[in-house]
Length: 70
Image 1 (cartoon, one colour):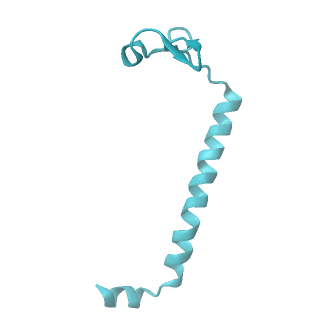
Image 2 (cartoon, rainbow, N blue to C red; image 1 turned 120 degrees about the horizontal axis):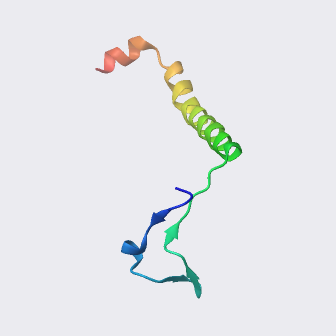
């Protein structure tokens, strides 16, 4: 990926300029070990944070009350 890149010229139609600056339609990705580790930790922490509220809310409900509603 870092040598060839992702060619987006078929989507942008040739030359692409953003803010008056000509942008290369081939996106080259360079991923380092440190940034991959940071992304992994960030995604893990966001997933844990997003699951706390539903878990607390589910923990407050008695199973008997839930079964009565079904």
